[in-house]
Image (cartoon, rainbow, N blue to C red):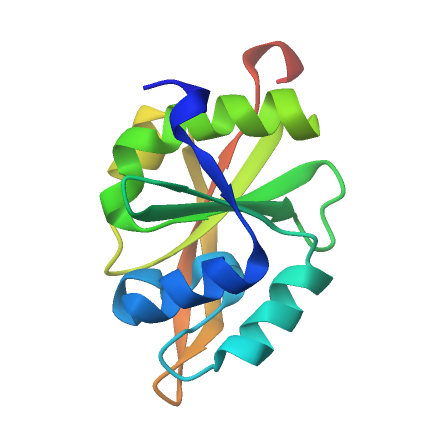
Length: 148
């Protein structure tokens, strides 16, 4: 797959796609489309300076990581895993991001991230509120080899 197959989505379109399959996008750049409405998610994506792309009906997103100035947070649906390498390349070329971080719930597979060079670096306890309960998230990072 090439970067050309990734299409930039505006915030409103991204929110519509998030709401089309809310369970697949829980935690997408910190959002929860099951309980958050499109207007709220639109404001959050805009405030986060997020860039959202679609490919084959799946969303991938990137935004500057809060409190980690050298990192960009990456999110996607599990079904978008095949598109992750091209998306990371696009994020590097277009936005200058080099270090990436993602936060995965216990029920999310890290396989696509691991295949793309991410490494598990820890667990954040009670970090993500879902269904009225605080859940742990596993943190994965990708740092270019020459930077490590």
